[in-house]
Image (cartoon, rainbow, N blue to C red):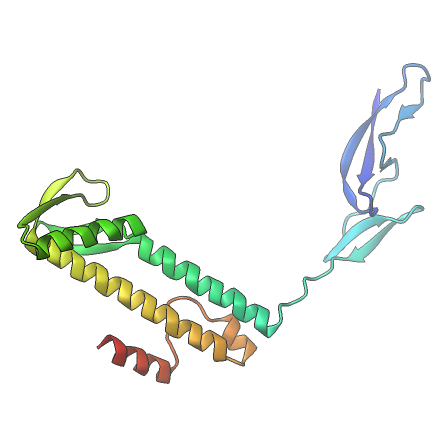
Length: 201
């Protein structure tokens, strides 16, 4: 024979149901696991958790996490900007080449490979072996290598410049609601957007 009992943690908070088995030596007596009681807890009230206080189940409000300070929020947003910028760059670009658009990842190793191809072209190479993502290795013409290099450098320059200006905005923003809503790709404030365009031009 078995019966359902109710378990709580060291602080008394309900964690779930357990099974108590009847003692083979004392029929009618159940072996209650440690940290369990036979009293069933009530259904939780909205926003509450149940705690055994030693005599009865009580409903306690679930504590809400303390909101970060403005400086902590800024640090979180800066981390977001850096991480998203890096992931965006590593994801790569679609480059328009002679055979049509092809996708190239731009991890640090990929960037080094493209830089090496471009260096070979500047030294006089007319073609160089490489591969687009998921494709077999082929010979790319000097013109295609130049097009890929320009596309890659332009993309990386844009993303890193945007990320830097985004962090300037994050670090100067004093309105909490505005700061909370800043995401990577958000339109920069007018003065920062103008300054960024001047630099990129």
